[in-house]
Length: 217
Image 1 (cartoon, rainbow, N blue to C red):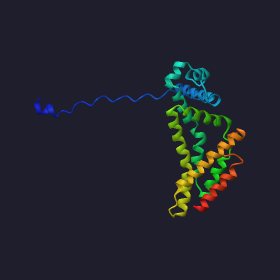
Image 2 (image 1 turned 120 degrees about the vertical axis):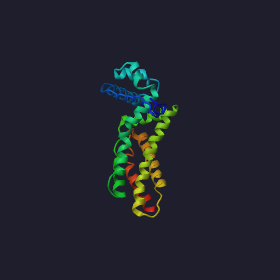
Image 3 (image 1 turned 60 degrees about the horizontal axis):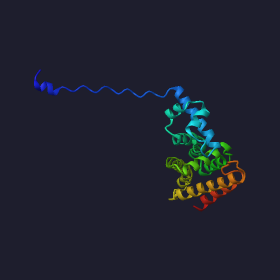
Image 4 (image 1 turned 180 degrees about the horizontal axis):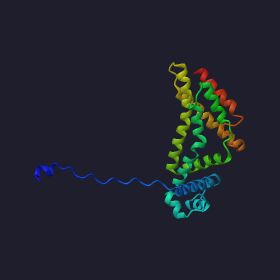
């Protein structure tokens, strides 16, 4: 074989990397049990009892297997934040993004926020905020969740801006409503501990606030 022919040969391609195997069904079940146990402990305790060892014991999983799925307790807390997302942010996003006019979507939002949150979810939010005080990763994850929460209200007023078509800025209006919802939820929680957001007493206030902001925008 000539030298030119040797130089023109294409080097063999490296062997294809085998795809990473997907988590087994058993592994997913174990992980789900650990997250459920973490939720139980977080909803009931805010102090030293929330450890990977206690989570493992409650879920019936070995401590070593717990660390196979979660490096530390912060990873468990982050998993809980992800786990509760469909229970409080997703319904709000769906209420805003669903069909209808601004008034129809606003009515869905008010009706949704008037439903009781439930004691477990309310306690979980309190626990997560408590852990966020001393854990930057938890704090960043919660801040990201609340950005999505506030974005729902901005998106609601974006519908109004699109309907009017005259340069209405939805951001300050949406953020004002989001702040009002947070304040009403805090007052409701202190009053009777039901976790309603904003609760039977706050629902008319929220409805009036949205209508007032929309009329004056």
